Length: 267
Image 1 (tube, one colour):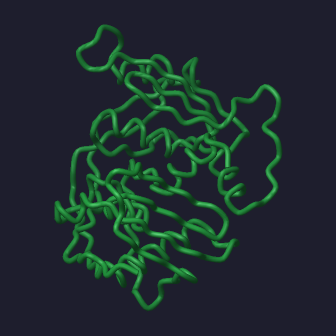
Image 2 (image 1 turned 120 degrees about the vertical axis):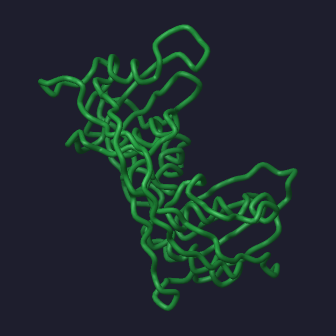
Image 3 (image 1 turned 60 degrees about the vertical axis):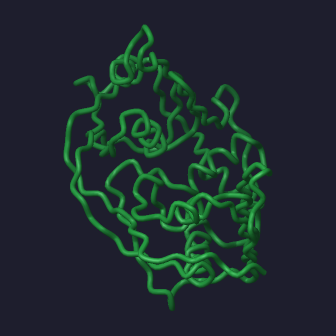
């Protein structure tokens, strides 16, 4: 799979989680299972890896909290009461599944594995907290000069490639699938607004609620001055370059509370 497509797939796997997304709890009896699965202690000297290919999930040399965030669609800051040592030690989880399985089903299979092998027990705690509402900055609804709608949906393309389904070439002149966020820079192509919001949320440290009314996929480039540097602040650049504005708001957010977790018996 191309690197850009795999990057977008990783964003898809962990979920946008920038707004008041609910954590859906499913009874253990109703969770699908991997056809074959293995859990092993990882090697802290080997870099971590996430590989999702047709019929296979590999979470290699990753702390278990990473698998939990994928399985429950919740970002790391919304995990409550994780045991420090167990959350730090690496594990390798591999699961085999039907090649036709969609990502939501894969996540539920991973959830079942965590419950059965790690004895994971959790509950959801709903909390009110400060947030931002994302709105269009211009009254006429026009975007800023560095935000554009696109017909290229890279999330769907990555999912199709994962399932070995045919994918049409990107139209000539369209931006390729891209997801790059660094210190003071953002460069994305063919991503939904929810993915952009996740990047914005990580910069401002609050959940973001979508009040734009926008749909579809977008290309965007943005530059701002990291804290302590000269240049436009993030919220200023957001308004001037993308035509989007953040307004103070309140929201309720689901937190995943870890009640119990154990080290698994290795295969």
